Image 1 (tube, rainbow, N blue to C red):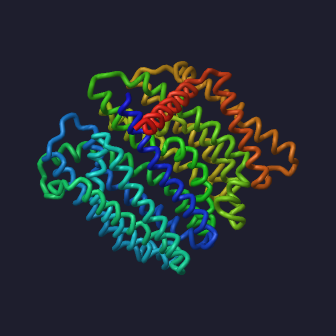
Image 2 (cartoon, rainbow, N blue to C red):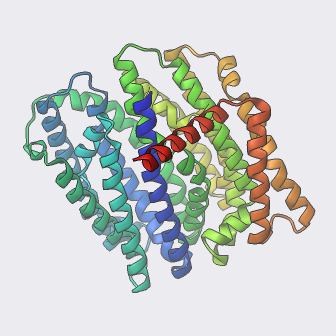
Image 3 (tube, helix red, strand yellow):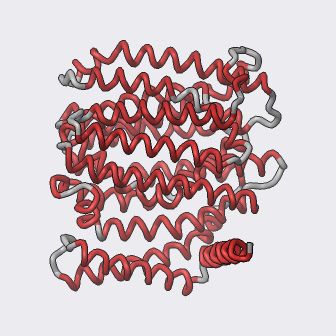
Length: 486
């Protein structure tokens, strides 16, 4: 448990730094580029996202969950990854003009070709970072990813200021891939990884078959709203929806950003030792919801000043999207845990079966909504996300024997904490009397009320997160005392 907490601390620190870099980048670039320019990048990334999912047919996560790992396994895994990535890169680059014609925007062609190069370059760091994750070496991972984040932010802002427009994002990805690749190789010096070998390729492909098909389904579902809005409405609509989802994902990135890279190795280690994942899963649900739910409700209440701060006044059309999606996202509390649990116990086939159920239904709902406009797509998530959550939890419950009442017992305190937390900001909004369009100064006051309400809610409900916070403060205090004494 101590190793997991240390890994979580390192990973969280790295992810917070990357998140801060992304905040700065988004805030600056959103004031330089127009929604239409950013819309080109959004459509391009949606297309690339589907291409990236195909790479999961040769998923590096195979190396994490494997019980006994040899050099032959690693080399074989890299070789399969190299073959898949090469095919996808060539296909993406060669089809770029056709995709640009489909959207009637020739700007997509150079964007996709540069992104294809970045996509291939990422292969250098991928196996090394995966092995470091398996070994819980998150200090090195933090150094690699932080350097990549700095490179991406610096290049994006610099090129946007120099007039590279939407291509700033593409070249920034190339720069990040080069930096992370060089640093990963320099830190590990395990050059033997890159010697081609097909020993053990069957295990990699068998794992990747379900994993890749699942990823392809989910990535297609995720990309669909952008592709539909860009085609049916405009690139501006796709950009607005993208930025709205990005803001709504902030609570997950802030709260779970560092945890996600630790969860799969930690659950896999528990499973390899024959331990039940039931209690760790329930404990994680309780902690996650105590952070995620209050954050989402406060985000919905303070959407206007948050959009103003992050994006600027040309993006006010994002505000209702943020409010709708934030409420829908309350049902996503288990999403980041379900995949690691099923992978760690070897139930990759159930991940695929789950995707076969939820993705087609979700696609039909979102496609129908797209013909009614941007807000209709956002409202459709009020159906899609709860449906996905129900199906996902049903599959998890079958494997680790959890009842619905046990899930409720794990999260009800978090629901109470969330209600107490948002009461302060809502009272402030009602008192000010200008709807949700409050100033940044007023928003800071409302945020202070939210923080106080959150702590009060944790104390009143006796939430386990409060104990975790005290433990963290004690660890930090002890570390500070030790440093002073030395």
